[in-house]
Length: 192
Figure 1 (cartoon, one colour):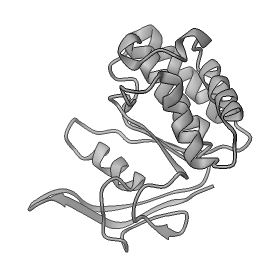
Figure 2 (tube, rainbow, N blue to C red; figure 1 turned 120 degrees about the horizontal axis):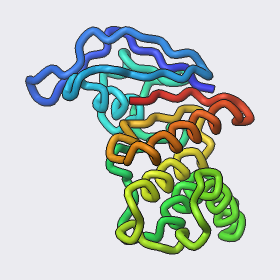
Figure 3 (cartoon, one colour; figure 1 turned 90 degrees about the vertical axis):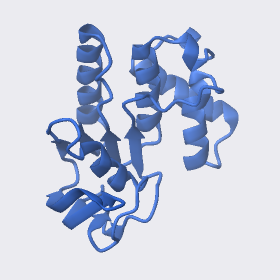
């Protein structure tokens, strides 16, 4: 389980300061929701925690270590799905599993990917479809399945349900909360 610690975190693009003076500590197992108006830096903060943006290493720590790049112990669900369009939906889950579990054969990898797809209410026949042939809700469920499948102790979710219809959004929110609560250990989740 990973603790996230920010100590006077500051970040800017060029001379434009986006975040300033952020002090916060999230304990292992927390489910944290960041609220704020559009453009206030929520997504930037998640990208910093994920290691997709560079921060001052003394200002941000995850699991007692300075964040210096992406890591498989931090899963990320993007608001724009983040699926590779040239890969099938199932392969989008499998590629993450192959990175984390290098000793697994392709059958084990596919078995776990299918299990996570089913956990998020996806039919097996969707597994071999390309993202362009899926609905927005299906794409988001595959992206969420990928993040959960790597079993990262820290899950970052950047407005993952913002573009979904109300029914799909409610179902996915309930599913994510249930998966978080029923996991073998509660992973820390930071949700926008």
